[in-house]
Image (cartoon, rainbow, N blue to C red; front, side):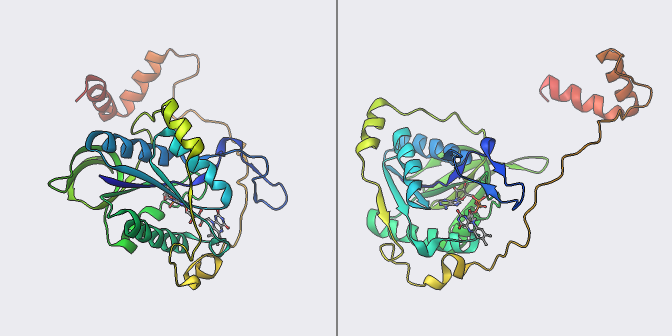
Length: 283
Ligand SMILES: Cc1cc2nc3c(=O)[nH]c(=O)nc-3n(C[C@H](O)[C@H](O)[C@H](O)COP(=O)(O)OP(=O)(O)OC[C@H]3O[C@@H](n4cnc5c(N)ncnc54)[C@H](O)[C@@H]3O)c2cc1C
């Protein structure tokens, strides 16, 4: 199978600080990581490759330093890495990002053959829009499977894939045709560490680096700031809350036993006891 995984290098959100005056994110000195959702995609792609053969390509659009994340993806087990980098891409919103990524994916297909699956994460931990996956699918006219929690089956011969997706109030099981785009949720698998051979290969590997011209992106007016209709009007840090938590169940105090608290809650919400009993007993 030929699989592509879109990955984004993001600042480690656990270490981000907001500038007290400008309210912008202070990126200096903040380590970068691969967007965690993209690691779940990468693992799922590697599992399919291990089962059916083929190759996994990772693609990122970003500044030259995003090559670090691609190298990490190679060390985890990806076969090829493509960095799309050019000053024309600076200041891209999601519309411009999806345009550039979709064009690069077309070029990847021309160069290394048609893809069976394009993976993205559900969202990033910095931009957080969750628009890029669906946007790329739309631009490439691919069937899109979003909020995917599990790939149940994949049959490259029959050109079919069956997935579980998290839906409001339950789980949907969907079957569709390949090629398609899959946007993976968090916590869907355990990401492998990669072997020593993968690390050695990654250290020596060439990162294929494409400018807009290399990727045959002709309409530069659709790239970067020029191609971005989104305007950030205001950025602000939310005020820290000062209110304290309040007891919602009248008659229950902090000194009551857990059993007494539960009994009071269930008396007030009888259906909750039934739901929780079902949940605990596995129904
Ligand atoms: C006006 C404006 C200007 C901006 N300027 C900049 C800027 O100069 N520099 C900058 O870094 N950001 C900039 N951004 C943010 C930029 O729009 C987003 O980072 C980008 O569009 C991706 O959106 P997201 O992070 O919400 O991705 P989501 O839609 O939440 O991501 C979903 C998935 O899409 C894939 N994906 C997302 N981005 C990429 C990527 N770049 N490469 C490969 N795969 C990807 C990943 O698989 C990810 O899990 C700007 C935004 C606006 C509105």
